[in-house]
Amino acid sequence: MTPLGVASSDVSKHLARHREMAAVLADEGLHTVIDAVGLGRFAPKRRRVSRREDADVLTREQHARRALERLGPTFIKVGQAISTRTDVIPPELSRELRKLQDEVPAEPFETVKGVIEADLDLPLEEAFATFEREPAAAASLGQVHWATLHDGTEVAVKVQRPGARRQVEIDIDIALTQARWVAQQTDLFGTTDIVAIAEEFLDAVRQELDYTKEASNADRLWRAFRDDETVAFPRVYWQRCSGRVLTLERLNGITMNRVDMLDEAGMDRSELAARGINCYLKQIFEFGFFHADPHPGNYLALPDGRVGFTDFGRVGSISDASRERFVDLIWGAVNHDPRMATDTLIALSENPDIDEPALFKEVSRLIGKYHGLELGKINFGELMRETLGLIRGHQLGVPNDFALVIGTLGILEGVGTTLDPTFDFATAAKPYANKVVQERMRPDVIAGKAMTALRNTMRVAEMLPEATEQLMRRVSKGEVKISVRPTGVEQLVADLKELVNRLAFAMVVAALVIGFSTLLSVTGAPGWVRIVGEVGIVLSFIVTVWFFVSIILAHTRGKRR
Image (cartoon, rainbow, N blue to C red; front, side, top):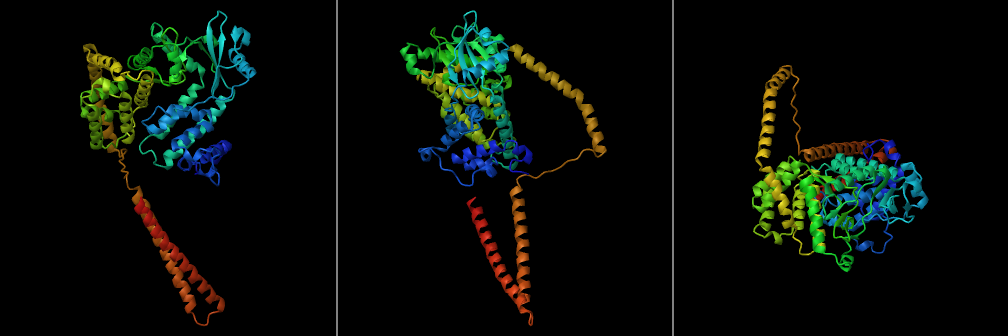
C-alpha cells in the first residue's frame, strides 16, 4: 500500500499537485498535517523558511488559513464551508477560517464573453443590452459583471472561470483520497466519520460549480419571500442562466459589514438586524431551507430599508426531526431540565460509545450557567458555541443539518450584535421555537403521529411470525454465524508482537555470541577463523548494547505517553 492508500498510478496522475500541496504545508510549518494526511513522501527534504517576515509571530490557525489561501479555490471554499462547523473544529480555527477571501485577478473580457456566448448560444449583444467590461467582483471560481437586459432590467451576471471545474475536480479527488487514508491509517478523529464530513464539504464545493443549482436556491428563496416587504431576494432570469452563467436581479445597497457607510446613509441598524435575523429564523423554523453562508458581506441594506440577500452557492436544509430535536434542546435548557437535554443529544448522536454520566454532568453545568437569567441577558452566540464545543468534546457525531443550524445561528448572533449591540437574539428566536412546540401539541399532529406509530407497529407485528420462522430455519441449517471481535486490545497485541520480536532477536544474538566464542576456543584453528570470531564478538557486543538502549528508550517513551 502506498502512503496514500491507493495504487501508484492513481497518485502519479496528480503527482505535481501532491508535491505542491506538501510544499505549501511545509512552507507554513504544518508538518503535523503533512504526516497526518499521508503527504510525507511528497514533502521537501528540509523545512523551508517562510518568505514572509511575520511568519514567526503567526498562530497555527493563521498558518492554516494562509495555507488554504495558497492552495487555491477548492481549499478556500472548503475552509469557508468548514468554518461554520465548530462541532468539528475548534472555535479559534473557525474564526480564522471565516477570514478566507478568494479575491483574485479578473479574467480578460474576451474570455468572459467566450464563456457566455458558448453557454447561452447567443452573441453577447443579443443576450444583454449592456454589459460592463470590468467586473464588479472577481473570485476564485468566477466573477460578477453588471449588465442590463433589453427591457432595461439591471442584472448581475456571474461567469465561471474556464478551467475552474477541472482544477476543482482534481483537488476533490486528492482530498477524498487523503480523507480515506486518514480514516484507514489513523485514529486522529476517534469515532468521527471524517470521510463523510469531507464528502459533505467537497460536495458543497462541487455544487458551487453548477450555477443552475445556485439559481434554483435563489429562486426557491425568492418565491418564499416575494411578498415580504422587509427583505429582498434577487429574481432569477432563467433564459440567461446555464451551468457556468448565472443572471440575477441586481440589488443595489450597502453591505452589512460597512457599518460606517450605514451610519452615513442614515440607516436604522437595529431595524436591519431585526429584519435580517427574523428572515433567517423563518427560513430555519418554518421553511426548513436556509441561506448557509452567514457572512455580513452577503447581506445588503437597500435604500428602502429592506435587507437584501446575495450569494446562494451554499444553502442548508434541516429535517423536521432535527428541527424538533433542536427545539427540545433549547426547551431543556430554558426549563432547567438537563436530563431532557442529555437525552436529546444522545438521540441525535451517531456515536455508540458515549460516556453518558460525563455528558450529563457537562450538560448540567452548561444549563446551570444560564439558568435563571432573563432572555435579554443570555449571550445566545456563546451558548451555541459552548453547545458545539460540548458536541465536539464528547464526539457525539450529530447530523450535519443539526450542527449547521447551531453554527449558523451562532454566527448570526454575532452579525446582529455588530449591527446593534443591544440586539437580543434569544428573544427574537423565542416565538419561532414556541411555534414549533405548539405545532407539535396540536391534536391533529398528535393524532397523525399516533396513527403512523400504530401502522408501523402493525406492520412489524405482521412481519414478526414470518421473520421468526425464517430465522429459526436458518439457525437449524447452520447458516447463522456469530462472530466476536474484541476491541480495545490493539495496543496489547502490538506490545506482545514487539515482545516476541525482541525475544527472538535476543536468542539470535545469544546464539551468535556462543558461536563466535566457540570459534575462539578452538585450538589449532587457522588464523582467519580466530579473526572472524573476534570480529563477531565485537559486533555482537555492539548489537547487544543497541538492543538494551532501544529497550530503555521504548520504556521512556511509554512513560511519557
